[in-house]
Length: 157
Image (cartoon, rainbow, N blue to C red):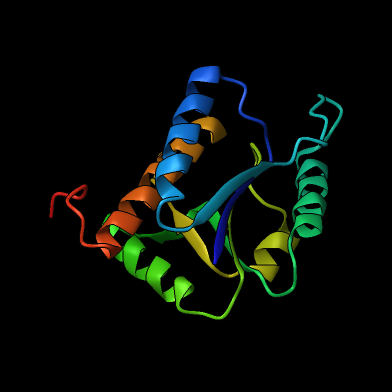
């Protein structure tokens, strides 16, 4: 299975990009992992929130294939700890699907259409974070989950 972290916005901070890259290398030891950034949406004051979310939703849908598993990283999602996340990940790995896509939305979240299409949602925190930071958090948790599944010592439980 290939795991992809899809995000609506580009990572602009080089130090954050370096962290994501370092975790990506570690994750690839366990599973094929990559990141993809959708950057075609222009953010202007003229765009309304719903219009932006709809445009972002169209770009998300263009990236996805019918056979993908798609999980939204969203504040409205299920709160899980690292052990629970590793179990969810294992369940996804045990499917016959080729791609597992985790999606980070834009500044205003996802469009109603995206919410209606994809029911799997995970919250990484009850707090609100910049999309760049969320990508680092997610990569660390994905790495941690894979070490848990491999019974390695990275996770201290």
